[in-house]
Length: 285
Image (tube, rainbow, N blue to C red; front, side, top):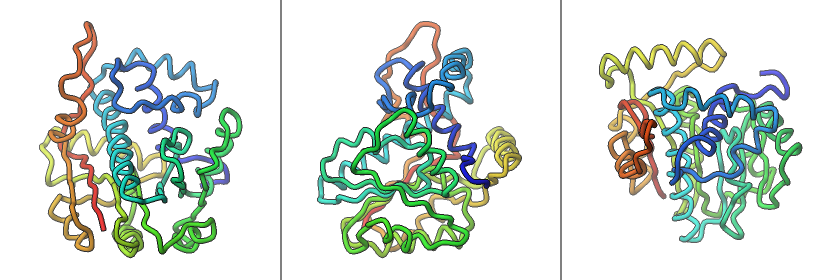
């Protein structure tokens, strides 16, 4: 990855969060007034043009997934803050906007990402937004640098509880990299917590969904961001034996929690999730 060149998937995630603000009817799953401004004025024509494809099933499902996982992370964060946690670490932060709408006084936000993607975000923020005093950037090249060391350098307190959001990252990791980061989180003090998403392996999916998954895998591999790591719920639970109170949610759970009873809008398809691949998990220490 070249200097100041972002992850293309990070842009795609941010773009769909922004289209949710512009084109989905209220109540929004994720109310994010920063999602559009952070992309800058040059993105507005593409954002407005996206309305023409807003009701395509694949678009609905992906957009719904991305806003639901952010909301789920932020709801669990609020629980952690209520119990005294004052450090929030976003691993693979991309263009996450939470720090710019942080409602929790005293909560420090640490955004961890590859230096190139993070510099790109900082450039976007400098052009259109102010820097929140609670936000600290922690650039980490995971191939050559230590996450604990780089966090410590920017003021993260390893002896205080923290909450971690690890969204859109796990499938791109190797198993050793996943376990290394998980071990770091598991070593945090009691009261710490974690949210991450993961995908189930091909063998756990119905045939039609396997075909769609392969198309998606080929696409992200073609832009240099291949996916490697998948788990069944039983497999991921075995990786989390140091944690307690696991909540592992699939499509039916998330549709029931976030998408049920949304008002019908004439001529529009209902925002919801499809398929069985993606899952969201929270765990506590």
